Image (cartoon, rainbow, N blue to C red):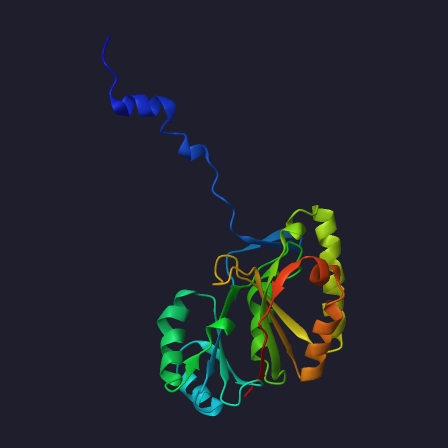
Length: 249
């Protein structure tokens, strides 16, 4: 009887066709039906917030970043008289390494970064959006760049493990309570939100980055206060913050 080679033995245990039978994960975002057809998209909008103290005047930073080749927003920091926050937006993660970060380094020549306020995330879908691509790239971009909505509060959060152990029906009920408050504030043009997932992207292992954007500051504070009473905030958040509060120039 001929002796089997190690390769022959390995193939007997792990057939070469075995890996071909493993279906790759479906990474597309899914929305609701549109014109009777299911929606899918692999395009997402990424955003990064960087905050500096001892920075040059915000107007000078804005002028320098206007040549960055990537969409940006510049904020005056409410809680630091020499603080500036900068937000970058792109559908390509490489743009942050190739364009945004070098431009910020050049603009913040005298500033010192505050890493506790660094946030990075990506847009995502819940699966029932009537216009998926607008949810992923259109509306978040318009919200961040709207010149009339000058005030912003940005913060990260991490859900507790208890939320993950809820059934899908219980999770939907908890999220619906939260969402109803956001819709009411949005319908009144008080607050418009940006929701970003940051799983594996956040240095503090947070799950989400939230941006609250509006014309005036008080409604942004009021919606945070109102949401403190919801089950999601009071029962199912492990941590929240720190909060960056800024006014767009």
